[in-house]
Length: 354
Image (cartoon, one colour):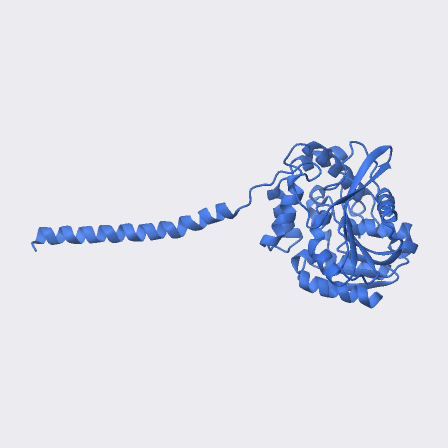
């Protein structure tokens, strides 16, 4: 082989090697980005009453009139094969629906409990009225009407987040109908107004809620609910909730959400905890930092809000018959973040009380 042919041969070899290395390098760089893009969920689009979204158990509707308006309250009534005689009512939070309780509901049913999980008026599959005076007392009256309709006179009332505020109000209104109160990271354990958050108007809430989308909800829940974690099972509740804001009727969804936020902000149950007369189980993820209207708060006071490592203990001291169970590595939704640990503590807390 001559020198010129040898040089040509070497050049071709190096060119092929260069192309091979370049291809592998680009594949290693580009492929993960393509995979990541493909794995990102497309934002779901649902109707204002979650039309298009199927719940894990059959949905029924309780029809009634409230404040002169015809209402439909969606609910799941899940009966075990062999009932132990206790009914547990699951009350969802602000950014949640009855369907979000699916893991807890299934666990309780497997242990013999009848489970009733309603969507409150203004939420998810239930009516979203154009005009409604939202109070926790009104939601309590609605919930009692549903339970009367179902023939349930005595139940364990279990509420998460805003549902915890409703469960407390219900127990204060109807203590004779509450066998036990179970509170999962309830909001309202502090008075945000008194701590310095300026009052957000309903119009401000409305404008903020119109901007709701899956990305915003996901980022908020990752930091507040799940202590910086994100797993596949966290995505379904995000799509379920945010999907109502993407389709037709998004304005009535946002309007009701604004009215409900105003209710939560202006009606803390912090001052009435000492008046509870029923056994109360507090299940608290101590990494939770939830505080309503925190984004409206002055920057300097935000670190002082939503400190559940302190709020849970303070609430347990105020409530006369309280049992506190803390989850040191969990956030606002321990029942979703670590259902095994949560369900174990829940069952012990309920059966121990009984």
